[in-house]
Length: 614
Image (cartoon, rainbow, N blue to C red; front, side, top):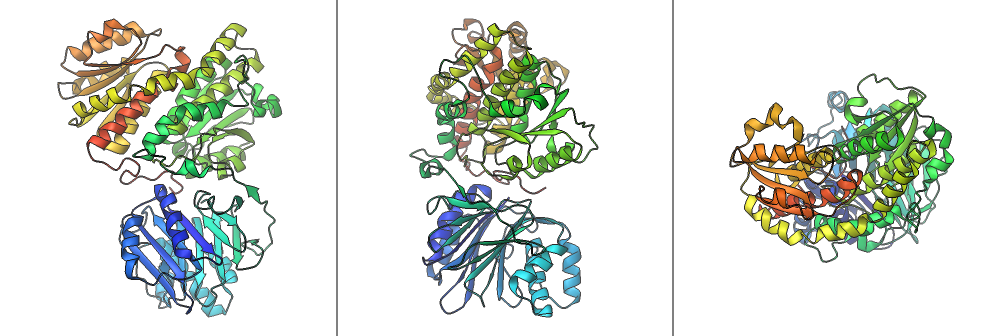
């Protein structure tokens, strides 16, 4: 995934582009670059390996004037991170420049054909192939830029969001998308481009979300024009985005991740607002009202997701099966899309994605739609591709998540899945009134309970210093806590680069126990629930092998406190709601271990916020 920014208007483009790149840097930070057309008609491209700061330093003594430009922050796919592989890419004549998010799957074939015609390449990227192809078509057939882009994209196989400049026409940007997000912001005598709305909201709240196969013709002092690859005009609605600028700033926190961890009480309150009533005795989801028949009559639910969203899906499986008595399967979207899965018209497929742009999840949605399933989306990013592709769904409304390691989006997804299970269980008559009221009331109290858990931050920061040395971690849980253990292990891997695995506690004796020694910290979720005694036995087995135990226990548990090396107390909640409180200390533990190790918490190596390419 890469970040795209563009501007055309009356202001200096460079400061706007750089600020936009900083807001999109979570999407990729291997390299960055900018292309500007100045008043003399020069098309200047400046690129640097590494982060946006490196690009700014490189540009210190460069001519960065101009009121039209495009910029890019890269997550490398084809070609190692380097200035030559960074975007923007020139065409051979240097008349054109392009930026691109996505993958051109047939780039090798196109490149070979262009080389046979005498075209020379300067990089190892698939993106340069596209700009060279556009120029070749434009010059050979004497076409305008829009038509050349249309002809070129017709030959392309793959995913893309692109923006193209031609120095011979400094009043125009051509932009296009297929399976990669692209947003056009509409201001006063100016336009903005972004991979999402975060670089745009400072200047305008009016945006157009391009759809697959759309090409935007953005001309200075003219109306936005959108056409298809075949040239058919498209009418797209102008939407109003509601993003508080403060949500995409650190707000005094050292890292976005820490800010987003501490935002969770407010975020989950927002997630429940208008859905869980003030008396805390009823949940209403509009999707259940509008599509009651499809959801109530479902014979099976299949959840498709990737990464952290997949862990949320595992929790959702348990609570849906518990309250709704519908069989639920949880699939990695990346595997689901490449199998020939058995999906019928009686199935409901729930797609979970923070960004709403995850390539594998979007492809899984399209496959399930082709097989006639009813599609329900759970996403955070309003107007993104997955919500537009689904039959209905629910936004989690936790605000922009900038830190690459997902925190508030995870708890938001679990909260929505819990509300979905409650509403569907009530509609199906599969949950007793007593149990329904108990869970609804408990869910309403979660934001305040998370505030209580966040008070352990100092304790966990001290604890993290003790375990920074570790090379491996084991995370154990049972029932609803098993996916939380997996999520805790993923957080540690993502940002501290310590190897960690999450297991069901009962599976420890089937292999992982061989790893346990005095150098192996084991995080155990051991709250008072139906399997407490069994987890207690697992802890004793770990201690018998000199393992170091960090235990998450219910408040007042003295038994495990006498055995474990470290104890973090959690407030008492119903078992099905434990993931919402138990995940918080694991997020904090991963964060503080990574800080102690001097790692870049918000932008871990090799990762990007959402995977919009395969």
